Image 1 (cartoon, rainbow, N blue to C red):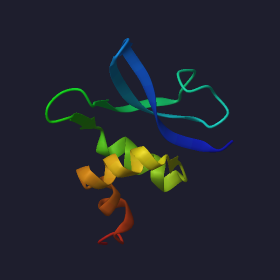
Image 2: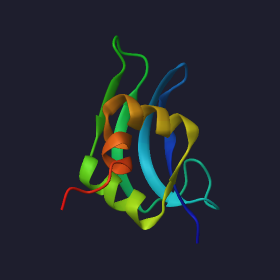
Image 3: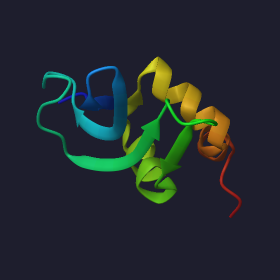
Image 4: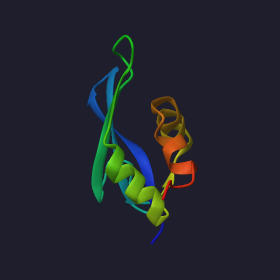
Length: 89
């Protein structure tokens, strides 16, 4: 089972709201997911991004692949850098 971190769309027509979810890549965009790990509201000024860092880092360590858009959001929030840096043991 390949796991992706991706966006699911919610909200009304012309007023999108997205949730970052971890799901099987075979499930539909707004279908079944394993865990909700954040929110993204592109219509607010500035865009509102709320990420749960610990679960995201755990899923990335397990091999979950973020989509391109999610990877951009993780980079902007600094989560991607935390994942890529070697652990300080």
